[in-house]
Image 1: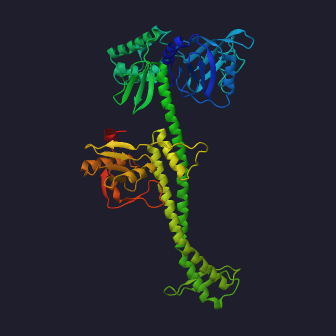
Image 2 (image 1 turned 60 degrees about the vertical axis):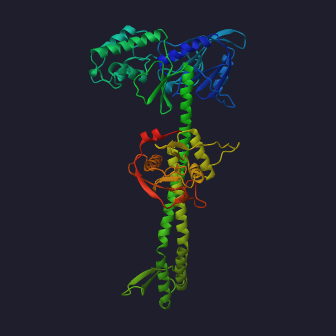
Image 3 (image 1 turned 135 degrees about the vertical axis):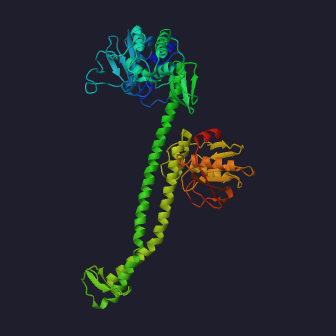
Length: 581
């Protein structure tokens, strides 16, 4: 979520005791939208003006800086290095921060400058002002072509953005409470009404108001009784008092092990699937949330890049296979060329050079029908016969070669389909890196130049059946091979039938697995396959000793026999229950 105005106020309340009076030692710009002020006392103040993550916070995360500092960074260094922080203000409940700084110029004269952070989504910006309020420079210049009402250019006087036509919990508390008492139309959702009429409130908090009043996040005004309307008004009053008293609590929300939101107060609207956790400080909370999100976005971006590369290769291989099949189909017509050669040879006595067509009786069919044989008028009759015999022999030779090439192309396409399946299941950066290495080793993407990347131990997904037997599920084709190679010959191997998916090993430790063990392992094989959303998925299984890897086969490609088949339906709840790591 973007940093809403009240949460921003909470962050600033936490920052003031640490920043007021601090001196700026260094200015860094690790990314286009990020400025880091290194303050005396080993403090790192991050100002982010990115569209998806605008914020201000103290950070402990070390970021890599470009070899050549951007021009905006150089300008800030010129004006701000050595400056002292005098104040940090937020205009009312706006998503803005104004840092007032005491600076000393190159002539030793003391003056004040302001650094303004506008945390307003895609219009976020970072602006440096001089003592008279003129713009010295800004991270993003806004001219008349971009905005007819508010330009941000060096030399212009800076003006605050026009406030939204909404009520503030602080400056208009009585009006805001009266409006909450009246409420909206009967069919209007409470949370959407709150967002439309009040400033500084995020969608998460608007849903929380609705939930605490009507016990549902999507409750409508028509469903609220008098007591519930009173509860809604009380929520507004309690929130306004908490903000006035600067009474906040850093809260981060986790779902499936991933941070999904954060706020400044307790949250009750979610079920047990979402964990609501508190943190010691807002800066710690923001570091944790955005670091995890940036790593997820990086992994997703790498996943998209790999998926695109594999998809292009897969489509290219599919086109190659289709072209080969077309050529192979042409070889099945080779007997026609031999027939033409035979009939031309049989009719040499009546042919003349320069003819374009031979009308000949086909002695190989009943009733000897007459057929037309095209001729090259530039060739003699003997040469035309030889040409047809040559084409026949060429197609006969090509048949076996094309059959081999088609098989190779189909195997390559199947391999690339399996890689796409692994990419669809990958979640962590380590998994994407493993698949990237596999594609580099199979020459589908280039290997990185420079320092050789160290391979790290990469554990498979591990589960335990209801009776306690361990089940291992491969995360990549290379790991699929390793699992099967290292497994005990008495362990059981599982794979979806004619469907791309992970290799699954049921470790039996010499014991005979029960029907439930086999079925749970088969269910895991179906879940980690392209048939994840299907039902009655066929899964083949057999002892590992019957699984073989053909010489020269791509990673993950095996043959097997003496197998049986189970039909199972993937169950996400059971997968989570059996999961170990």
